[in-house]
Length: 571
Image 1 (cartoon, rainbow, N blue to C red):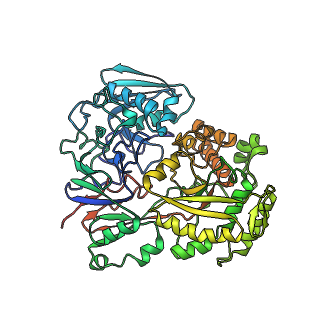
Image 2: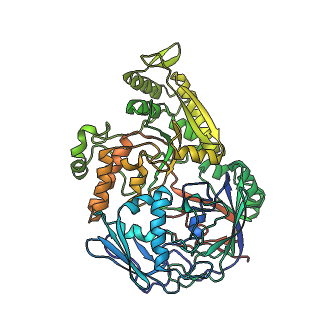
Image 3: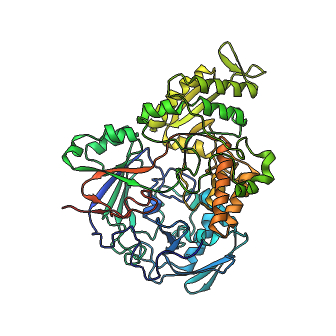
């Protein structure tokens, strides 16, 4: 995106990979919930989240040591003009699907057109910005864009490639469980039982084993995904030796509950992996499409009533710092206090419509850590009264006598968020707010989340050091009413849209960082999410036979890190 890639054209492997890692071994990973689809590329169904990282590939691949840098994968070369109005890819001659068939230009064009027309909504944004896709040679194609957006040339290299022949005459958008998409990746689905397990086996004839970008990766012979009713059952299965590795997100649990016999014997190892990526946003999101959360004062009242210090101490021992903005813990985060000159200049045209605090500074409330949180409750009461709500007979009501009430929707296996909600409800009841907690199974939760059928619900949105077009899908106005989008809160803000545009059109790192910090300010001051704690370290407990390189990527652990660069050492 800016400057040149860090690695030379003749690089041997990615810098955080062991190029000589041995192949072999079988591991089992655990998921909570279930699945009713093995097609990660359509909206329909619940899919094992790991699948698209293990079975399918794109024209280019991302280095987790370099924001905004891609290297050739299915494509052996890429060409872009200075203005980035188009991009041309040439396919590797040796690229193959897992059935041995060659990856062709026709497959690539079919994939981009089908995903843009019938695929998951996350693919729609790029499709709308493509003017034409044309074949330019036996193994090459050119994609021309209809939008001035410098990131599109990179984004175009990141779409999964499907087999056109497999889907000839089939309904891609409504594919059933048995319609497993053919991929080019190192693993294939070799067995499964609906809702219980998926067996992935490394393809011994995988075409890309010696491609520098892939060298030293995907080393396990088999990866099995087992499914459990909830995270508590999953953890017990790990303690019993039925699962090979788990990621732990609770610092207190990491310190106090990982002392079971396998750990004390040394059969299970606790590994911590620091990172330099942004915090992203984790918390309870409020649906602004309908009352009462269409009023920023009500949303701020909910934030004031959330006794973070007490809840954090109760559930994590206070070991994890709070998320303070969408890009906190990184160089892209908004700066404390009033906006600087560059950020102010970007936001100035929208000054009249910005949420309070966006320009002059917004900070989350800090309680004294006691259970009562009197200061927060008083602040919440005042805000609700300003918004037209007042207590009557212990119930918060509006002028029409209607009670302030809402439901927190949670997935039934989300034990941590359920514990947080239980503590939060007590504070809301003291305010006179009628709030209930509703739990549903994984399939129903996915459907309701996609349809924005909730008042308040769990929220987790990871962001990177190279935010781009996906930001429109996360909080652009166009995604606010698009069912299945990631814009759960329903943000529809001209200022947010403009900051995303400025970010995407930036030609220098300074302009880019300024735009992201401005975006961070508008989102944070918008009070859409009640933030929880951030995860400054990755924590993975794993059997001693699982190894990983000493050199960690800039991004630390992530969905593509384990098991991708790990290996099995039986000695």
